[in-house]
Image 1 (cartoon, rainbow, N blue to C red):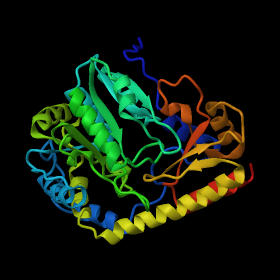
Image 2: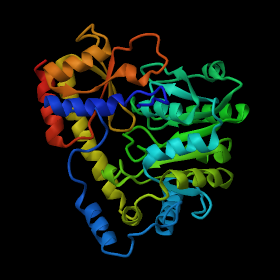
Image 3: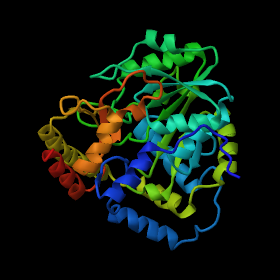
Amino acid sequence: MPIKRLPMRESVIRGTTILSAQLGAVNLSQGFSDEDTFPEIKQLAIDAIGGSYHQYTNPWGSPILREALARKLAAFNGLQVDPERHIVVTCGATEGMIVAMEALVERGSDILCFAPMYENYVLQAIAAGVNIRTVEVREPDFTFTRDELDAAWTPGMAAIILCNPGNPTGKVLTPEELETVAAFAADRDLLIFADETYEYLVWPGHRHVSIGTLPAAKDRTVTVTSMGKTYSVTGWRVGYLVAHESLTDELRKMHDFHTVTAPHPFQVALARALDLPESFYQRLRDEYWARKEILCEGLAAAGMRWYEPGGSYFLWCDYAALSGDDDDVFAERLMREGGVAGVAGSVFYPNATRNPKRIRFTFSKSRQTVEEASRRLRRL
């Protein structure tokens, strides 16, 4: 007898990926690469598999990876951490976020998010038994005020989620905005779950700052990060959490009972990847930016307007000049008739009272895939 314990739908993004494959559409919906990873990354995995890393490692992460992460966090993020006390390696950022919710937030509590927001947060909140409250940011700069944060606060609120750089908008928060969030969290005694999955993908004119470096946020921030997105190895399922030891004690227990440990050989391979030179990351950014420009040519020809991203590999697009359809109808028509798959913007607004007439595309795919999508968009 089937039992439905949670009022949870399937992921629209993953569903779009499946349908686009069935229809033969170019899939610009889900944020992962459709080509092989970099040769140097593959070789690191081959070397690790050739070693003695085939059994469980420490549940909160291989010492090799945690030590490498501590060096990276100091050099890149400005976070001074002890690998023995402040890091938990997880099976990707997806597990990391739900572990944070389940370990640190009481069931029935509220979590505040900025909308538009990554759809997983809502589904994870349902699974964790917590409620999502939202503050809708304002286009074109996706800004907010302290007054708006205070208006959204509830006595049962326990945490705020910050995605920086943002998914779906590509928003990179300014230092002033980060200070506003940190002060709000401190004044209201909230935890900060900082999703920094796209920290290496920040575009010219913008700078990534980890909110955990701010004094008001230091001891209340759980930084959630994916390694799969950075190195185009999403199938390896390795991410990590960084937090004060009073929080990691709880995070480690919850992670242990979820998955025990992330894949051991891939942890070792990614520890070595952290030693790659800055030129590797610049090459990555240059290539993604070139693909973004190719996609924008097709969007412009189709009559769509996009918001220039500060980071990530997503484009948040306004199609109102092209169609009056609601976004779910438009996204399906574009997939079926235009042969290009994106994600309807309303997916990212869990509490929306209006249809935003927006659609999200990713330029994380191969240059060949993005070029084909651009060609199809020009024919609309």
